[in-house]
Structure formats: structure tokens, C-alpha cells
Image (cartoon, rainbow, N blue to C red):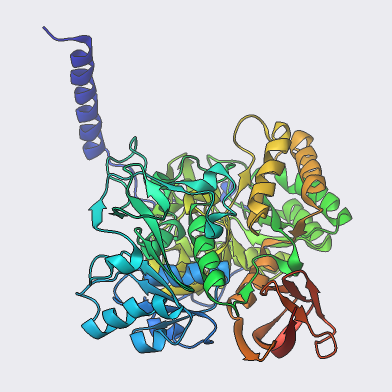
Length: 629
């Protein structure tokens, strides 16, 4: 006799079979399939055609580790033991958190630094006997050695464990609260990190557990150590059981769904915790450590107010939001859909009236970004396109929620940018897709189409509340000159946005404890509680936050990404050389606690507050002198 559960299983199987059969007979349309859009369903601006130039997407060019081979002796040295590893994710993470570093395959060169990180593993397979012997002696001589995936080579005693055991059944890492390098992990979400979700996948992110560690800084649920600490006089050795490069790449490629418990509107600093751990270890081991802050002008938090203008009434409402933001001297970003086609989603609103509102936004000092032409839920499935798509012949059509025709990735990028720039006289460098539908090829398409800043993911799916650099095809081998600044707070979750002000301010405070970034997404389809939320949120965080548009922050971040630091020690004096290739305002550095700025020789634009140094303006090579207090 069949049980109820058995009957339901059989019924489910039959339904799945019928669905598969139906899908085979009636497959879903390919987004590249074409259909003719009736003329009365399009708004045609007279004599407007473009863009005229053809967009060519470059082929992938793998980034060489040698790009990062030069740097100061006071920086972190990354000893690369396998160039086919996820080292680029690690490099981008170090850049994000502001640790100066160099990458080398030469162990002798690495050991001229005071802090050395060996990646992706330490073993007799990847390192010579001489290299292993030199690494073993390094902490005894006062150096700090960080080993990622210490698998062999006889260095177990150096790192203070007995055996490294691999597993994909460890779903959680728990950090201690009482160690010096983990003392800033005061939040539960900072102390307990996920490596997987059993409900989504029976296998977690792979890890090594270190057994019999006397001083474990972090442990898995099976009791083995995720991070070990072994002191050696003035030196120390740390072993990390997680491949940090691939973990960072997982978040940076928007593939962190199984490592987070929420999509947005929550605190999930997983990658930030690992990077802050490296930063704390680096500072502990390098007395001349100078790092780059993550927020302009020495503030605690970066806040970017953004609006997705993708509804008929949103164009007019957007002006009201912009008027408030101007009154507060805040630059916000308006991601405008150039909707000149009537379809399933909505009526036409990018017309003469819509253009008038667009121009008003620019008059009010707002930043304009692209929100595509079609706002298709299946944008992630669009083909790349030819790169010659033009208005008005480019006619993407959304027939149903998950059915679109005529659309291409380059068409959405090119045509929307062309129209927005033509009518606003504003250079469009920022992009956000409708529904955050994110093609794997988006990074290189953005680069080819002239965009530099993207806000196409959520912070939780990226596992970080900091910006990061994108890679070709959202993989781990080829970096693109495009930066992702992910969404933190959005307005479509319940309870309604106006009822979530205290939670949003608390979230901002948690992120601001380590210099994170909060991108707020508000659809201006209504005013009411959403506008009230924005006003109350701004009031609640303005005492510790820097405000700017996505392009303003993106320009600052891209300039910061090029900054290099060098430190020379002259007795009890320290000479800091800062090289700033691209002019920027508000560059902020963190210096050792006992450094005092020599005001007699410092440029007038340099200000010290505690261990924070802020350059009101910076460009070129700047030399700053400090004395030890």
C-alpha cells in the first residue's frame, strides 16, 4: 500500500515529467529571438540615431601576477606557490582592505619583508627543501609567517598543529573573542562565518582542519582549527585552513548564495572579516605598517543613495527626491531606464516629458546612471550582441515576466547610455541592471561600452560590504578596470521601507565600525514612506558618514586603487612616500599609533587625527615626515 508521502512523490514525478515534456515540445524563447515591435508601441525622437561607433568586447587577457611584483619593503609579501591558483581574488581583497603588498615566487625575496603570506599552500610539492627550511626559520627570527592551507613540508610544529585534514562537511567557522588580532570582531556575524548551507548543498566550501592546535584563533564545528597561532618570541606563525583567494573570488563573482543566510538588508561581512584578520596580523607584525582607509575624508562609513527609475510615475517623483538631496548637499545616483517601448512591464515614460525630468535631475546636481532599455528579468540570459545596436532600430520587447525578445547585452548598455548622455549632457559611467539580473559577461561588456562602476549585485550575495574590482566573465583569471559597489539596503522587502528606519541605521552602524559602504536602493515609484525613510536615515547616519553618488565614490575608489605607499625609517623618524597617479580628494591613511605628523614639513592639506592621516587633496608624489611619540 502506498503511503501519502509515496503518492505525493509519484504525483510530483509525473508533474515534473509532464513539465519536461512540455518544455521540450514548447521550449522557452531564446532572448535573442526576434519579433517586430509595432510602431505605435515605440516613442521615436525625431532625428536621433546612435550611437554611431561600434563597441568591441576584448578577448580575455589573463592577468599576470607580475603586475603586482613591485612594492615597498614595509608591505606584505605574498609568496605565490602556484600561479594557476585564485591569487587574483586575494590580490583584489588586499587592495580593497588597503594592505600594501607585493607578489613574488622567490622565497628569498619574500623573506626580506617582515610579514609573509604563503599562498595557495605550503607543501613539499610546491616548495623546495631550501624554501621550506627558510620559511621554518623565519618566525624564529622575529618575522610573521601566514600560511594558507599548510599541507606538509614538515612545518607543522612551526604553525602549532599536528595534522591538516580536508573536508567539505564543515559549514561554520567560529572566531575567538579574546585574541588581539580578532578583538574587533565584536558582532556575532563577525565571529561566526558560514562556509555553506546544508539546505542548499550537502557539501560546503572545502577546508582544512588543523588538529591539536594549542592556540586556535578560529575553529570549525568539528573542533579542528580553522586558524592557528603559534608564537615564536617576537615572531609568530599563523595557519589558515580556507583558500582565501577562491573564497574571495566566490563572493566577488556574485556566487555567494550558499555562504549567506540572506539576500540583502542584513549584515553579512564574511569576506571583510577574513581581510580584517589579515590586516590585523600585518599591523601586528610590521611596525611600519601604513594602510589605506576605505572611506573618504576619515569618515567611518560611505553612504551612496541610489534610485531605480523604472516606472511610469518615477520620473516625476525622482525630482522630488533630488530636491531633498540637494537641500542636504548630497549627490545621489539615478539609474534611469530609457523606456521608449510599451510592453509587458509598463507604458512608455522615456519621452519628451521624461527627458524634461531627466534634465531637471542633472540641474539639481544628481548623477545619472543606466538602468537598461528593457529592464528585463532575463537580462542575464541575453546574448552579447553585435556592438552595433542603435536607437531607434534597437527594439527589445518584454512579452512576459520571463520572456523577452530582440535584446542583447551590448544593446542595453550602448543604447541606454547614448540616450541618457544625449539628452542630459551628463557622462554616464555607472550601471545597474533591472532586477539585478547579472550576465556572466557583464564585466567585459561594461568595460567595452565605457562604464567604470557597477551596482549589479547585493552586498550579501557578494559576502562583503566593501567595493571590489571585477574580473572577465566573473571568474578568477582576468581583471577588468570596472568596480562593483554592491547594494546593501533596498525597498522591496517587507515590512515596508518606512517601518525599517531603526534597523537600517543599526545596519549602517555595524558596517561603519570597520569603514564599510552602504548603498541604498529606493524606487521613486511613490513618495510617502520611502521619502520619509530617506530623510530619517540621512539624519541618523550623517554624523559619521560620507555621502556621495556612485560615480563620485567610484572615482575616489578607482583613484585609491592606484595609490602606492613606501616607508623609510630614520632613527626615531619615519618618512612616508605616497604616490597618487590620479588626483583625488579625501585620501585617508592609517599609520602606527605612536606616529606624530611633523607639521613643519607636512603639506598644508594633510591633517592627522589619532592614527588617521587625511589628505584634503592629493596628486603625484607626496612625502610626509613623522616622529615617534
